[in-house]
Image (cartoon, rainbow, N blue to C red; front, top):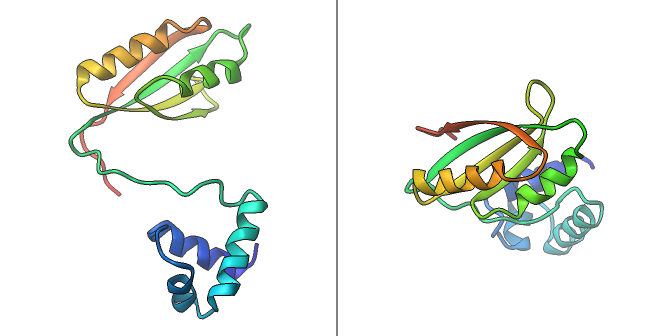
Length: 137
């Protein structure tokens, strides 16, 4: 990945809906060159997906830290967590806890339901839930 690829990624982070020609104008390359570079970034796995970010201001967001029984595969727990409604993303981490989960739900009650479902997964031995009061970007 070179400097131009990084510029393309930076532009896409700001607005992934821009056309190839609009990206090209910002960077100073042709539409064809941008198209080829983005295709290459996708095939190399640098760009995994294009996503939509929704304003979650009207939702309740929480962080859940999870401890996993050492006899159970952390990755198997992570796979199960990804399937729970309300779970935005799952991260295996180092430190006191094994997994970090972001939850976004309609209400605190819905966050609680999600946490209850997490706790029912075999191998989860402890959770620590924090409701997000305010977010900054």
